[in-house]
Image (tube, rainbow, N blue to C red; front, side, top):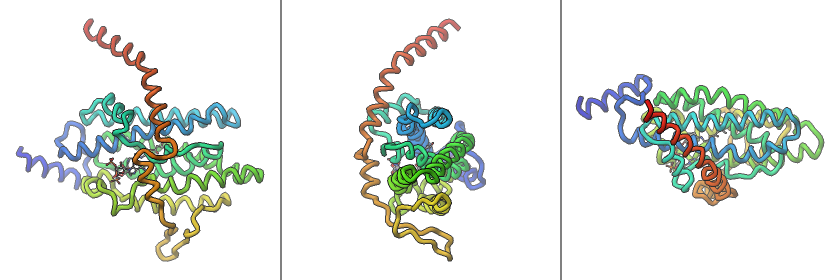
Amino acid sequence: MSQEEKLKEFERKIESGEKIEPKDWMPENYRKQLIRMMSQHAHSEIVGMLPEGNWITRAPSLRRKLGLLAKVQDEAGHGLYLYSATETLGVDRSELIENLHNGKAKYSSIFNYPTLTWADIGLIGWLVDGAAIINQTMLAKSSYGPYSRALIRICKEENFHKKQGYEIVSKLAGGTKKQKEMVQEAFNRWWWPTLMMFGPPDKDSPNSAELMKWKVKLNSNDDLRQRFVNLTVPQAIAVDLKVPDPDLKYNEETGNWEFGEINWEEFWNVVKGNGPLNKERLKVRNDAHDRGAWVREAAEAYASKHSSLN
Ligand code: 3HC
């Protein structure tokens, strides 16, 4: 088949909703976009373990510790799952991880914010995983087979993460005056950075058009952000928390909770590496990678010895 015929066949599959599989022909840009998006997604899962891991030794009860331990272990699994899915595109995970460690690759902005109190762990589960569920439920329908299948499994675990987070928030919101103040203060810190998780406004999103043309993204950044706000505001009201947005108002006609202006300067600042904890997050990841070098060397030595014996 000529390049033209291959492109036609690829576009026919996309249009008909067929999944593109690793061995199928695909435009180079489709492959590049997927490597960028999927590897950064995997990086986000791995770096996302850090803010929460900070509270494992300080969880207020054994039950809370068990829930948090399970969640952090799940995130590690999501990261490894997504690195494996990315490797089906012909890249090696060591190269992807190198790009995370040297600052070339991105990970979700949200994980550069500190977890100052136990309430932050509830907010991460409720808001951050809640946002991730909205984004990932869409991506579970994306045109690239390995990505879509990885996300079907990941979404099931995210739902548990969100439930345990919202339970923590509702307990604190219904607790003592101090607990209520603590969870409201955390909500005030996490609300806006969570809205930024969905990416820049559609008008400033250089990748969306191509990703939507090829049905990797089925909804735009702004659509998913609005969906998140519409779902989450009633949940905040249900536990008597005040959404930190004086411009928030319900539009009867559209059914949308309209919200105030997002601080895009803060967003791009964090994305560019100047957020509250960007440097610390990368240092922790680099140190962990260096400390683990002996494990990789031993595994490689074992593998090469055994492959030469076969
Ligand atoms: N944090 C960091 N960088 C971001 C960002 C964010 N929240 N939002 C956008 N960006 C970056 C993009 O990566 C892109 O830069 P690049 O071209 O160098 O990669 C640039 O800003 C422009 O943004 P675009 O809208 O053009 O980029 P995309 O079309 O890729 O959309 C996205 C951004 C919505 C994050 C999309 O990449 C996506 O859906 N990725 C997969 C899901 C994902 O990565 N989620 C992160 C959270 S994972 C998580 O929360 C785990 C859970 O268990 C807690």
